[in-house]
Length: 257
Image (cartoon, rainbow, N blue to C red):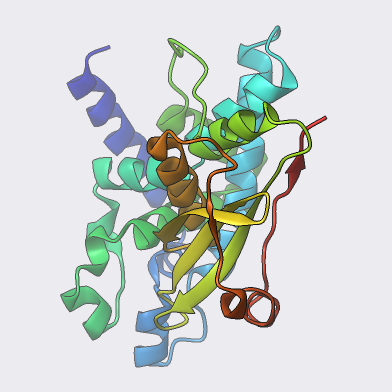
């Protein structure tokens, strides 16, 4: 199948899914929190996004499990992470022209909200959540498979966080963690700054619309430095601890054997 045929098929799959939904569910899936606040709508798409995120994960895990019977747990986890990443979902949403359906507040619309990755990925997840609620698991699984699962992978994709973990794994007794340094912007459009910390030292800073996206950015920048993992810079003490705890610090720690 050519790229043009694949794109056409994805658009048709998405539009058919929308047609299968009732008006209330379809409208809710596309209602951004900025629009809900501005218009006084009782619901935004955040709850459907939450549900759709879980459905996406399960659908991709289920499909990979069947497609790759000999793959290890680690390989399956890496492939799933790649397929359900914010970057993958936002690109897919762009491909099916999801942005034109979004209901946005005036400020969000005029500031490029229809092309904003976070909005696109979230709305796509909300659509999957709506399909699951209205039509059940089977149609939701079929939608995800038709949209997202390629026929084959030339190689197992490895995300930046995994590669950073593997680099640190080579250093006996070393630790890797991610610390939220700041959260800026309005509640519906936060920007996270996250430090990649190896053995208590900052090696890079990443930014993103979610903690996961910022962690990936920080991990990628750490890998790009191509320096020993224990050659980092000490974090300023006043940026660690109180701020992390107050904002809900998220730490993923790896201890090498």
